[in-house]
View 1 (cartoon, one colour):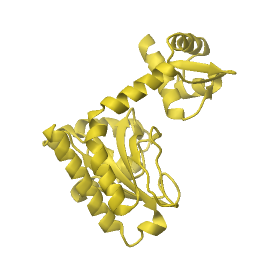
View 2 (cartoon, rainbow, N blue to C red; view 1 turned 90 degrees about the vertical axis):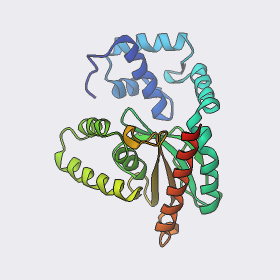
View 3 (tube, rainbow, N blue to C red; view 1 turned 120 degrees about the vertical axis):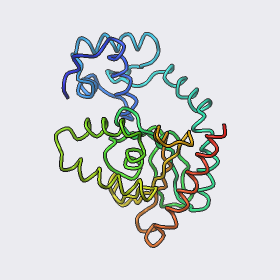
View 4 (cartoon, helix red, strand yellow; view 1 turned 180 degrees about the vertical axis):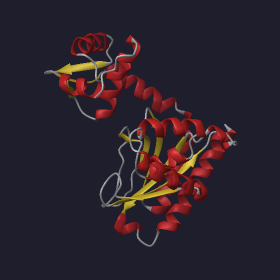
Length: 249
């Protein structure tokens, strides 16, 4: 990874925390160096500070989010207006379709799952709560990109596809179709054998500020076959109901 030469001290701390949060399991110093691009001496200073404050814990040379990070996560779960306003609509969609439903946001060029309602079926698809993947492919990513504010979308695509004009142009064409249709679909783009449909959630009636999140329904491709339009319609209705609830809050 390119060395982070123009970041402040505070940003270096955040680079370490972001790497640990997105990795999903404990990381060695070598792992964190590769993820952040920090110099080794810089990394150890940041880790020592984070350990002292309880944001990071260490066990046998491996690092993970610490107890203060857990307190932050619990506080987010309790106090997030977006999660609270979305949960009822997500439950209704999951019950109606018997499939898994996630609340997905875009942060730092990543797709992050804030909440997940699991399907009760034995064969089910899940994008685990807290999981993140690059904001490049899949129904969730494309829905979030398509319904971003225009300026933010242009800046994001420039970062993601700085050296790949052809891929960027093809994606921009697809995003235009998604905006016209009102939802995004994908199959096996993130996880093999998984079909997904994603529709945007807006905090404001005016859509110029862009979507705050997307509601994504996930199903095994074999079970979604022949039901794609019905599942898409239900997902769009759920996202619209959540948007209305947010706008009324």
